[in-house]
Length: 321
Image (cartoon, rainbow, N blue to C red; front, side, top):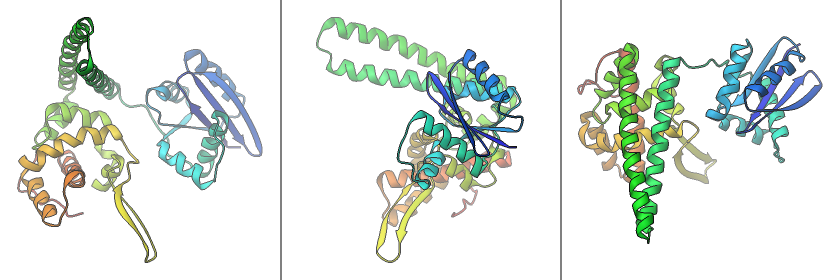
C-alpha cells in the first residue's frame, strides 16, 4: 500500500503526518540530525512504499530533505504557493503545524509531485555563498539606515566600524564567488556566456546560476520566466471584471531581485532590449511595468545563450512571446 507523508518544517521542529489508506498518524521531531534519525525510524514502521513531501522553505528544510533522499526515500520539495493554492481549493480554514502536515500529505497523495534530488556540491556551495552575500548586503543597508539617525558619537563610531568590516567581508565574498565559479569549468562556461549579455556582469551571472540547477530542466523560455515568477497573471471574468495584469510572483523572489538592476542597465545598453523598451514606451508602458517586461525578455536571452552554448549576438531576433 502506498504511504503518503507530509512534513511541515519550521526552524526548530518537523511535524510529520502519514496517510495510509484510511489510517492517519502524526508525530513531531526536532529539526536536527537527532530528529532526522528518529523520523527515519518512525517512517520505517509506516511501510516500504513511501513518498515524502515538504515545502521549499530554504535552509530550514534542506537538511531533512537531503537526509531522507540519502536514506532512499522518494522526496518531493514543493513550491509553497502550490500548497497554499491546494489549501484554498480544499477550503481549509484552520491552520496548525499538525493540520498543515496532513494537508501536505494529502497534496502529495492527490497531486503526486515530481521527485526531488539534492543539487550538486558545487551548486550547493555557490548558493550558500550567494545567500551569504545577500545577508551581508542586507545587514549593511540596515546599518547605513541606523547611522543616518544616530545621535551620539559612540554609536556613530561603532556603526562606522561595522561598515568597514562588512565592506571587507562583502568584497571577500564576491571574490570567493568568482573564484568558486572559476574552479569548475562548466560553471565558468555558463558564467561567461551569461556575462556576454549586456546588462549582466560576472556577479549577476553567479547569482543567476545559484538559482537553478541546470537550464536543461526548462523546455522553453516561458518555463524559466514562470520559475522566476515573472509570468503575467490576468484576472478577467465575463464582460465586467477586467482587473489589471500583474506578475504572478509564484517563483523565486531572489531571482527577480537579481534581475532588476541588470534590466535597468540593459534598457540603455543592450541593443535588443533597448529597442524592445522603446517599442513598449511608444505603447505607453513605463516605470516598473517596463522594467518587469525587460526582465522577462532578459530571461529569454539568458535561456538562449545557455541552451545554444553561444555568446550573446546583438543581431539575434528576440521572439515576440
